[in-house]
Each structure stands twice: as structure tokens, then as C-alpha cells.
Length: 455
Image 1: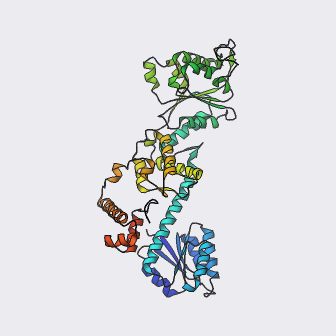
Image 2 (image 1 turned 180 degrees about the horizontal axis):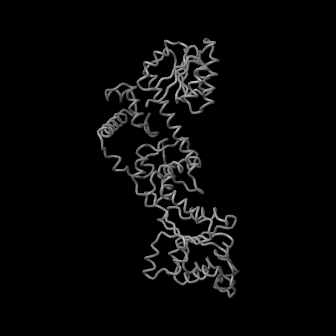
Image 3 (image 1 turned 180 degrees about the vertical axis):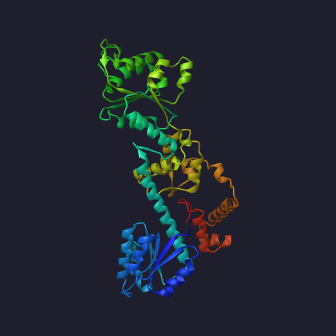
């Protein structure tokens, strides 16, 4: 179905001429005054409007046209209004652009110029609407700071809702970088303990000799350097949630003490004799195979079943269909705002490469690559080079004649543009096409001049 285009002009002959010139590419709607223009717009919502400022009842005065334009923009701020004006009204047209018009054309209108401008208008309008939909999707699909529309992540969100209202220990499984701590935080925030502390500790990041003290605390003089009494992480989590990341790295002697706490809700500090009652919920996580650890004697079976009352697995990013683009766009917006680079977007090859990448580091890897790309990018389009990714072989290999033709056209056009330092006229002459045709091909094939290329 062709996109809708509204033409507003009080001259019936001009309306008819424009309709014949554009009907092949657009569903053309015709209006002769402000009232009919608004009525058409409310019902059909065209993305682009061609508007003559001289409308009845005062066709020699731009006020009625400006009022109509303002009314349309008020109905939809994303509409692209192209003002058509005479040479003597050029200043008025510039003022109209300042008031919300997208662009203007001077009479007599060149058909090829008009077609090229309309293509650009519809392209920009589509991008803006996709961006707005993406923003709304972000708001609708964010769950306690986690983003995901894939069925696998929706299953995770449903599990979090269920386990959060219980006191059962939870074991979260998943590869490194899948967001296990965020899932644990989501459980805490949705639980009755949300007003209590959330204490996280990475068991693999603390030396074995210090881990017992970190978990259980110590009394003054318990060991060399223990100059004062100190609470451990378990005790600090009382009334809230304790998150034990990389639980599989806890040595066997500490596993015994942790099991006792899970059974009795009591601990003893290192060097202490007094039992301390602690009311803390335990959420553990690991990217290792605990069942293999049990078989090898490195992890206690009784501790495993105490921790895994409820077990939850976070999917790797490569299995989250549709989420890669969503997450990448979210990271791009955040880092663009933080770093102060606006108007950035991924080019087609970058999107294809992200979809084809295996993401061994999962969401954390994607986040880091996007942040680096935002910092290093020299143009407004982020490329596979900015992301330090190789383009997907599947995307590079054409599967249809149409794809093969587009790949060849893209390569020839890029070669011509680079050869002539991106001078459109010279490149068009060598390629044997007109300048407007080259512009159309560049837009169709998403070819844009990199910022670092010579002008």
C-alpha cells in the first residue's frame, strides 16, 4: 500500500497536475482549503503534507495557510509539512519553517526535485515514528530495570513475580553477563523485604582467606589485623536480601557454615562464641555447573538443595529473539545522552552484524561495545568497525536476485563516490545516472557520507 500524501492548494489545476505526477508512488489526498485539509488529516493521518500558503478566503495572504499548518502540526507533531511558495514569499516560507514546516519549495515546482524531497520526508517520518514506537516499547517492556520482549525473558519476568512474594531461597543460573544480579535485585524490590538492605557479594572476587570474615564478620582480635569488631555481609543483610554471586566458588569449609545459617538462621562471627540471629533471604547465582561440582566433590549436595528451592535460568543473549536491537538502542540512547553526542544511529551493516554475533559476553558485552562505539564514532552512523564486530556472513551472502542486485549496486556506488571524493555530480556521471537518480539510490541502499570522508 502506498503511503498517504495530502496536497492542500486552492488551485484545482495545480492539485490535478500534482496528483497525476505523484499518484504512482503515493495515495494522494486533495484539499482546497483549511477546513477540508484538517478534516482529511484527522481521518487519514498522512505522514507528509504539501501546502500552498495562499488559501481561501484570502488566497493572497499567507495567514490562512500558516494557520492550517499550525493546526496540522498540533494534531501530529511528527507530520512533515512542505510549504509551496512563490519567489516573492520566500521570507514567509522561511518563517513557516521556523514555525514547524519541514521544508519549502518555490514555484514553479520542479517535479524531480519534488519527488526527491518527498522521498526524504517520508523516510525521515518513518524513522521518527519507529523511534517513538521504540521509546514507547522501552517504557512498556522494562521490568525492574531489565529490558526484553523475547518469550524467554517474559518467562523470566513471570518467574520473578512468582518467587518475589515468597521467602524461598532462589538459585539463579546463567552465563556471565546475562544479568543475574539485576534479576536478584528485581526479586528483592518486589518482595516484602524491599525496604530492607540488598547486600551483594561476589564470592569469586574475594580471596579465600578473607571470604569467611566478609560473610560472617569477625570479633576484635580474632586474627592479625582485626583491630575492631566488624559485621559480615550476612549480618548486614538482616531484614533484607543477601545476594551471593558465583556461589560455586565458596570453599567447602565455608559451605558448611553457610548451610548451618540456611538451616537455623544463626551465625557466629570469626573469633566469636555468641550466636547471632539473622533474618535474611538468600539469593545465589552461578555460571558454573553445580551438579558437576557435586559429582566432583567440590560442592555440597545438601547446600545445593537448600539454595535451589526455586531455580531460575537466565537465557543467553543469542537466544533472546528480538532483544539485541532493543537493548542496543537503549544503550545507544543512554550513552549518547551521557557523552553528549546526539542523533546517533546504527547503520544497516552494524545491525546485521549485531544480530549475527554470538555474544559470548552477553548483555554486558553488548553494553560495552555500544559504549565504545559511541565514544569512538566519527560520524552519526555507528558502523561494524565502531562496534569492533565483523559483518555477519549470512547478511553479506545474497539469497535472492534482488539482494544480489542491491549488493552489487551498493558496491559500485560506494566505489564511484569514494573515487570522486563523494562529489555527487562526478560520481553520477561515471555511473551513468542522473544526480536525482543517484540520490534516490543512495537513500534506498542506506548509503550516507561518513563524517571522515572528504566533502
